[in-house]
Length: 86
Image 1 (cartoon, rainbow, N blue to C red):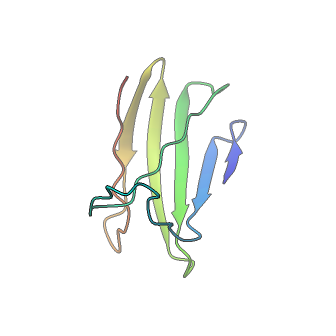
Image 2 (cartoon, rainbow, N blue to C red; image 1 turned 90 degrees about the vertical axis):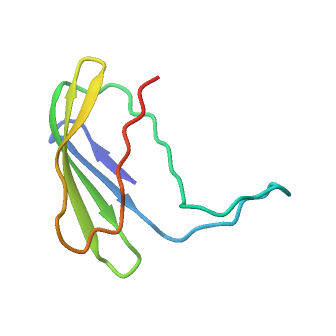
């Protein structure tokens, strides 16, 4: 991962996936959660990079306690970005 709140860029590189260690594993999509602290409000560029160096680039707006997806890739999309409020 590479995060720079100053220039508002966040990059995650997918290196691979590990199977769940639980004996009661379920099929389904891979999941990842990241908590981001010390951020400033504004539009961030979120880049997800696959092992083959394919990229999905999103624009996300952080405003107070709200996060919304402003723009997402239209072609070759391999990641679905879900924002979950707590």
